[in-house]
Amino acid sequence: MQPRPDRPNTTTAPVVVPVRRPGQAVAGVIVALLVLWLAAAILSNDRFEFGVVWQYLFDPVILDGVALTLLLTVVSMALGLVVGTVAAVCRLSDNPVLRWCAAGYIWLFRGTPVLVQLVFWFNIGIIFPTLGLTIPVLDVTLFSVEANEVITPLTAAILGLGLNSGAYIAEIVRAGITSVNKGQQEAAYALGLDRRRTLRRIVLPQAIPVAVPPLGNEFVSMLKYSALASVVAVPELLGSAEQIYATNLRTLELLVVASIWYLALTTLFSAAQTQLERRLGRGRSGIATVRRSSLARLRRVGS
Image (cartoon, rainbow, N blue to C red):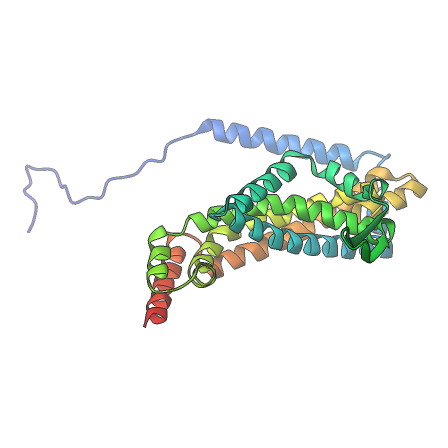
């Protein structure tokens, strides 16, 4: 049907005119100029030797520090996951003793700096020279060892980082558990499942997708907090860099070497975290899928 000549043609699509934002362009130009000025200032500075950075980037001492940093991060994170999960379950327990003990642990290790905890564990042998198990009634010592033989600098670093991280992981896991609908737990109890099986088969499969993003951030933070282990004489990445610049006095160059490795490791683990989140179905659609599978599992258990 042709439009009437005395009326305007209303079938023409309207022209969308983008809103002009000159402030963004000005801000972009200013930031670009600042970055170029900073790069030129660094490159033209004769006191900073880039050759030293490339010389020590793959030095065996630095690579040993990188390997020890990864070991320290993984072991401390594993300890934090175990302790944090137990603390989260106890925090939600109906037993007041378990609940208050878990709350006290979280309060203590979240309320004190991790550096203080590292130094404390490193010097624990001052107040406990020997560690062992004794039965006071029978006056029998089952075993006894020197504290300095057990609490090495690496062990002190693992205890300090792992227990501190466990307090934060406990809150992360608790938030994931409480995000699960209470009706599913009540349905599981009605079908005869005890609390342990309900937690393992119904609650945790739905809590894990919720807890994965903050747990990934905690792992990246743990990787960076591992640099504090150099205070207790652990030769991790920063400690290895300190050993080198203590002899050649190229402090800033070796700190740049350590920063490059930290950036590379955090970027790698952040990419792995993103892939894991996608695999678990991050977002409401992924959580809904897990809930549907849990409900189906619940029906199978009931049948």
